[in-house]
Image 1 (cartoon, rainbow over the protein chains, first blue to last red):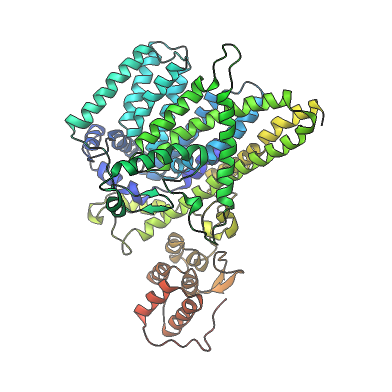
Image 2: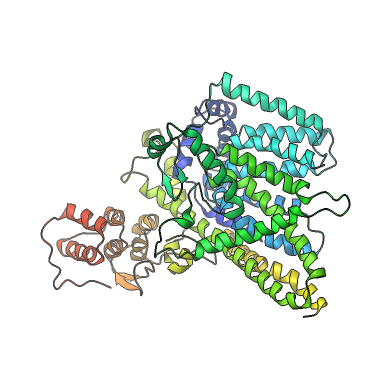
Length: 457
Length: 153
């Protein structure tokens, strides 16, 4: 049901003008998937994402093959990927009893209610590579949990190659493999990790000496600092001489954003100047629910496993989560973005699942008579507050559909210059027609306080 | 509360909000997939005035093909009005406090005559909406007198 709810709302969002239309038009002009891949190798000075172009070309060919139904194919792919992520999450959690099923229901709220999840669902690009990276990380973890073998090793290496050529965050698949191995899982063997390390070295060689690519520097994208969101010009003016200060700040903020839901993209939105139109209840709910879940995670990770007395934080899921939070935060050094932390957010929700399952079992056996009613009340309160956050995702997806549809009017002539000059745009008229005639919804017609309680005006 | 009851209730309390959210969003999602109509959080404008008043440029464009863009209609605008009001698409666009919506509505066939323009300018003045005031002043910068002008809400 979670998968159906999320993917149906994802599917309603039309192909977006921003970040999607231009790449679709460019890739459409390439003659083959291989040439689209090659085009992707040279598309940017800082980003190596040729699988994005190749994937876009594959989807374009499929759409053309079924009569030019571009929205069906692109949005269907995104919706299917969203469903796959949720199903993979449930598969990795593997509840064994009703306590586990209850904990999974709670963890699903955390998974879909976290702000890092929203961007994976709402943005397109036109293939959401952050969503794909989260799927690849979960898949690598699932492989590590198997009994292993040559097929598992090959699959893990293929995942690494595909992931790292999809998005820079794809190198996190290697971190998943290493952390899983250190925690005792042997589905991905040592020899596979060595192979991945060699592939990672090859990736660096491809990026730096071969393609002459550079890393991100100060002012390439806007990012938050304190309670402000700084423009690229402001960033260059303020941190051009001391970039390390911004890098350190952004890494620390990225470390905090998953467990505490603040800051968001480096900006401490909860502490911004008081706005009478934005009641603080939204922030209190976000921070309060995250603090409660994080307290449970810390409690769980500090416990010892009965058989060998090892601390829980050395278990596979917690260790992989720690590796992903740290790795994703490092990759965010130049600018903070919730989506970069999305794979870490998925594993955070997975650890919440284990923590809630264990906490429920402990409370059932140890809660004193006088504590039982307050425990029940607190449980309903925290789970209900997370439920509200999860419903907020649905609101944001409907709003995303509204905004993406509006873009097809307001970001096109006569109101704006189109991303691709119209004489060169082969697909734009068809995509415009498709976008205008699908996903009708208008969040502004909702009674305002609901939206405000999800942090929007 | 005895231990057996607590053992039954605690997992249910943990799961209940998740089950509710899953049912609400799942059923709504199936409805969206089957009938292109989600059951929750996805209201749809009923007419061009409602679309114009709620910043819905896409629906204005779609509806303009089959609607008289000068016809008043009952419009809900929860962000701007406490109760629905009968408005032309141009009036609704002015009340939306988004000047670009006035342009979109005009581009789709709404007539902006002198009387209508005066009404829109008075709406913008009453709402102290500087963006719309500036947009309309570029069309007509003459002195504005709102005495006797009917504000339609």
